[in-house]
Length: 145
Length: 100
Image (cartoon, rainbow over all chains, first blue to last red; front, side, top):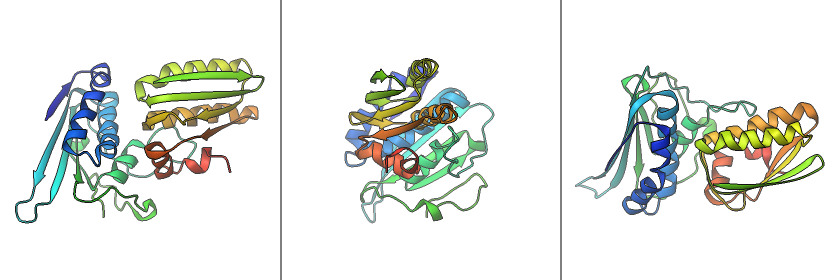
């Protein structure tokens, strides 16, 4: 499934449709997956340049039957270096990446931050993570542990 | 998204419904900052009927908190549940906004 947006307004008008798609593709985790991709889309719409492209694909591993939803969000623009640490409580910004990392099973950035890739395993329930020991380096590519 | 502001003296209750997205934030911030200009400094956000809040919505609460604390006010959040509660907990803002 592929969506293309040219503006925040277009994105705003498509959120219900995206959530509908997720409810079909991943009924048990639709809302949690929505949190992650919505933050990625917001970042692209607010800080990147259009077109903003959202791709949602389900992958099934033949040997194990394990299912994953792979989410890719990309945009144009200068890109950025992801800083995956939780903002101080008095700072209004900087929680979107944190939420993406907390709720996705894998989070990675490519193309100098212009593409974010998230994986959600569908064969296990979403779980809260201990974020105190969550992130390691800040080199722009992060993998959940 | 919808919201109602009920103000009385220095206090106001803000009941938010539905989904609070980034595109909703500017209007809501303007309304609430108007209330602050009118003397309201203690805000209680009732999120009982809120189903989703994005990081921009969280940022709105922090912006209001930053504005009212020097005036002797504060922001509290009640009624958060389900995914909204989890989002507050994951970002540790439950420690900032939830009444103890």
